[in-house]
Image 1: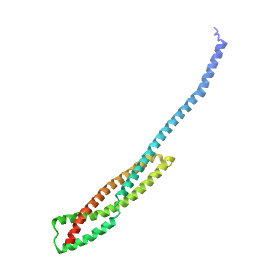
Image 2 (image 1 turned 180 degrees about the vertical axis):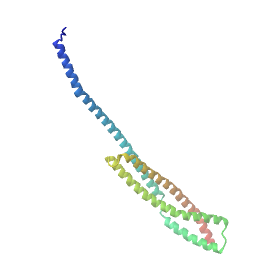
Image 3 (image 1 turned 90 degrees about the vertical axis):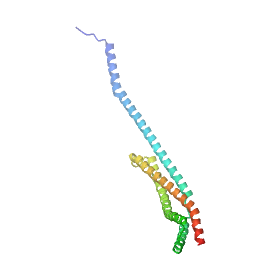
Image 4 (image 1 turned 135 degrees about the vertical axis):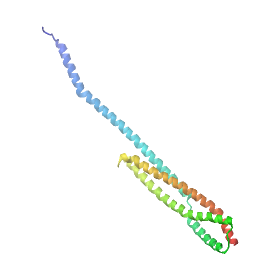
Length: 205
């Protein structure tokens, strides 16, 4: 029994075979390249988005540091040395007065507060020095980190850790500033009241 194959049918089969061979050799690699390209764009977009978030966070920290510096300057006591000198002289006068006569109870309590005031002066002064130094160092670190992230240099996998570390330092600076400002306000307020009362008592005696 003979199987008759139409010549046109045979030619058509050959064409289909060639077509599928063409598809397998050309279309599939093209699709693969397209997928790889799309994935590349996707990961690049994610990277750019993360980079933008990191730079925005750094800008926020820099603004915080600038604000802290402004508050520090506004609340800085430029006359700390003069206050210390004035309080030291009054303390000497009080010591002489105590040696001669007894001190009233209400004045004794004022003197205890006055001692606290004297002790708070060097604390405030040291905090102000530390804050100025800390602000300068953190601002420099943040600026350098901003350049590194912008240029994608250094350890990219460590960027988040670096930002987190600088954020902790900024928070510490803010906390120190808050405590120092409270201490400064109390010193000025108490000095205006207590110092005057003690001076008047010393002059009367």
